[in-house]
Length: 179
Image 1 (cartoon, one colour):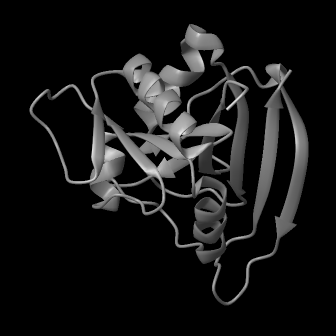
Image 2 (cartoon, one colour; image 1 turned 90 degrees about the vertical axis):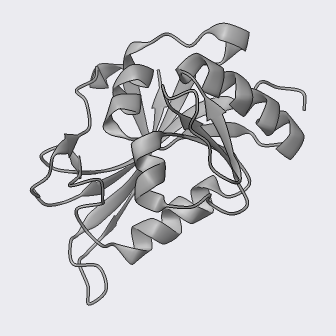
């Protein structure tokens, strides 16, 4: 692979910034799950242990990297990292093996906060893309996406969808690139 893979963040967020409740998604949007699968398949994904616990298994056709402070923690089919820096290093190695153009950070709230507030300049890897599903509703929850400097990002594309019989909330798929 000739270029360093980009670091991307993927999140589904309600209007009130809610992203989770009791370690689960606070909504069921099948189209968002399909979008997530399409966007992340064939790429390394980085998540916190609580996010992994909520999924309960490795995501197929992806290198799954879980960040945990528990040095004894392990799970079949999972690469374990002690911190975000180590996870990104493992993601770089996996991306090279997979010929993936990006490494996707997929949560949860603590990992999002760290990645948005930590310069990750090692090996020329920087957070440069955000895949954002906006759920057009306020929902109750206990995990929220952190505030960030939105002026540092430029909207590249957006696709809006109305609620329907399978997807109870209107939503938009947005791609943001770092300026």
